[in-house]
Image (tube, rainbow, N blue to C red; front, top):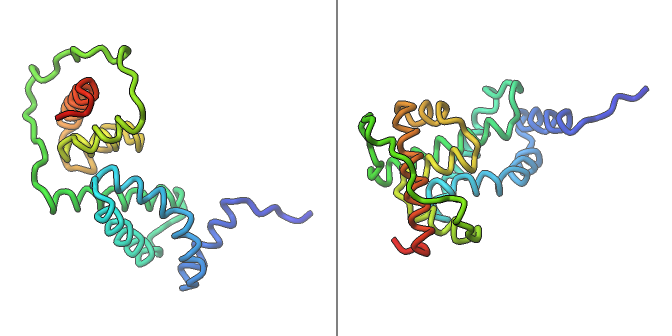
Amino acid sequence: MTPQLTADHIHDHVLKACRDGNAMSFKLLYEQYARAMYNTSLRIVNNPADAEDVLQEAFLDAFRNLERFEFRSGFGSWLKRIVVNKSINYVRRKNSNWIELQDHHDLFVENEIDENEMEFKLEEVRRCIQKLPDGYRTILCLHLIENYKQETIADILGVSHTTVRTQYMRAKKKLLELLKQGGIS
């Protein structure tokens, strides 16, 4: 009986070929992941040219450090972590307007906007997300779009879970306000 080649087996073969310096394998991996990783970066850095720069740096780092990839998780997950970290670092270097919050109990107020009444087109939501301050936008995108747990976001950003939770709540409230105003900030 001939063993079946699964997508994971073929994928591992491509990764191993990359470790051996096979240029075609590098190209295959890049083509497979570039679009998704670009979109991840764009949601964080909020600028197409910056997202392209981050994407290139992330792939270079990933390819330079392939020997560290241990095949315990998917390559896409490993690469995404690199892209997210590079994107966050880029935003931090470029702009120090992260909204830092103190851990106060009065920050946890109930959202006054009825979310169920608001139905918006995806493009309007994207446009309003782009208007959020860097810290808000990053946490909102990592949690809602990239599906990172708030505890993981706190670890990545080096802040407390309470800060992430508070920024997420405020980002969500600000986003809903922008949407309610028709995207006018």
